[in-house]
Image (cartoon, rainbow, N blue to C red; front, side, top):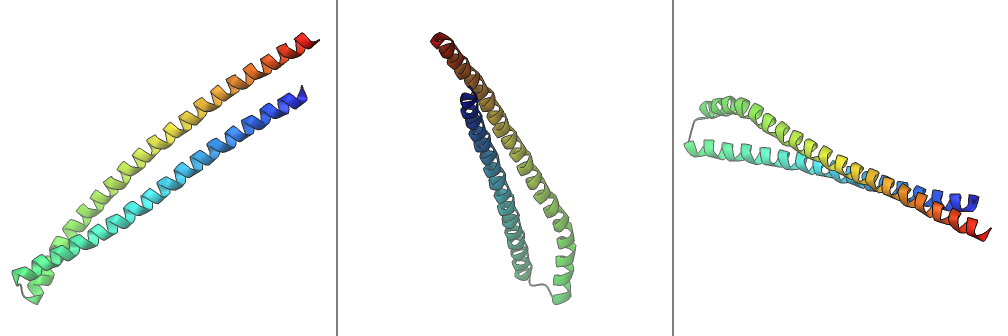
Length: 133
């Protein structure tokens, strides 16, 4: 009987390890997504600033006027840009939390089903042993 318990325990350990690996992979993928979002946001912010500077050049302003407009608009758009980026990051984090919770719930459900199957196996083996005796 201890041999059977050992085998059932091994199955449970493998299932637990699989679920742990699944969760770790999900977390790693989410970290990668967050890093990609940050890089994309930086690139986009640089592109917007460059576009704004070229638009100012097209206006043909003098040096001081150009710098003044750049300073005035930059301070306003920087805070707007930061707010927009913060909202994007928060949205991504909320989505990732939901995804991680779903994976965790799926793993919990799988483990409950696994435990139920293990109990059924054990009961069948006990019944078979009783019949032998």
